[in-house]
Length: 366
Ligand SMILES: Cc1ncc(COP(=O)(O)O)c(C=O)c1O
Image (cartoon, rainbow, N blue to C red; front, side):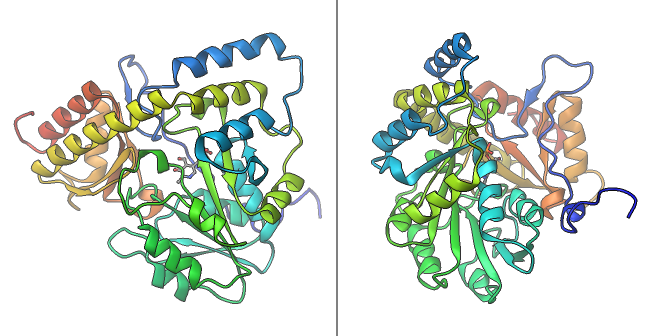
């Protein structure tokens, strides 16, 4: 042994690559690669963030008491069952390291968020992907993939990058048939965008038992991806575990301040949701009219699939969009090489996307 060596699982991780944010030599870039909120953070959250500056010599409140109280008030939840994290990514990672290790399996859905297998491997566990049907989480396939080694099951609802979701009845069926010692993690990062009547973010399932936890983020509709802030709502026993495993000051002071103001600004959140739905619906129709294969989405992004030939492929479309100053997300790393994920931006941004893709498809622009 001549040098320090990491645990075996670590070197099998393919590092997560975030959405790109710039194109060299261009100033007028439209960034639609990371599902960030199209309208930025609420002005009230910006103000609260700036206010934190004068007290930055102080450690933050390690208990995130005010933020948990505010989340509890807005969502009607017991703050004692909430834990905050530096992005929901941190909570996903903590759950994996606390509940799974060498010899254990972490189950997720085929096109599930990449941080599930990454965090599972980092914890020394084995990620196991269950197949999807029509780019949608398949409850029966997940249940069939459960083994005696399964410790955790991650379901993003709605899922990224597909944008599809499972109705409350399917999520309840999944929980009902899951062994009681397996922790079901419902990742509801995009919950605020969903307007479907049969959708439920996970609160009801958390309340119904001891083995379900829901994670949420401030990075999407609240437009606070830059401060890294997420939260989880779960049974007291699971929250206790997370509080033991997390760092004592895992959420910074500016994030705590901004988060409280952001979640209180419900008018801004509603505006973002309504605008997203209007522009998502418009973009979906326009892209289908161009002959593109669009997966119906309930989030703030669309999965768009292209022909498997060299002229109109996803790679060619990605290149053409870039040449025109638009950055979207290749999802080849998710096993979807013929598709691109396009975040729903503002109306002018999406008009430009449709215009560029119309030209790419050899059609007159919209
Ligand atoms: C499904 C899903 N879960 C979690 C996250 C991570 O969010 P955060 O910024 O809170 O770490 C994302 C971010 O893209 C996501 O798409």
